[in-house]
Length: 134
Image 1 (cartoon, one colour):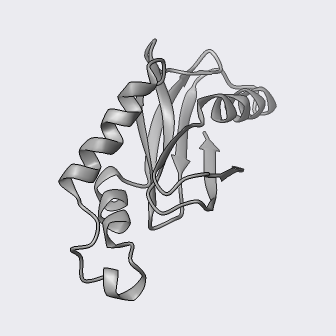
Image 2: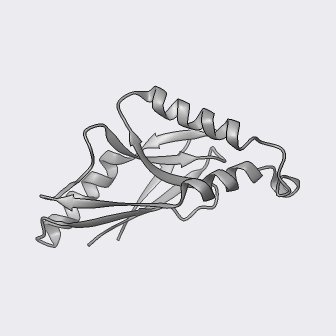
């Protein structure tokens, strides 16, 4: 098991972590002398999430975050009375805390345009991302 630490810069942000995860996959698969397996990527935070989406055109991530902001607006949740981030909790719960990717020939088996994205909904913060290869 490995860990990546990401420092987000904005309240709502999408961070492409594909290269960092791929480096871990290569290291772990070489260490285990394996070519195929599975990679679990998990974020242990209640206001962050992980998804796989296009990583070439940054407008895709902008559209994704805009759609979530429209669907899950800020300021209307009971939890907002506690610390003002009710929308972040709802967004993170819907998107989810993990992604699982097959590994083939020691590489993540992602589509041509796909990347692994950390979704920050309550930043800026330091986020831990757990990566497990089996």
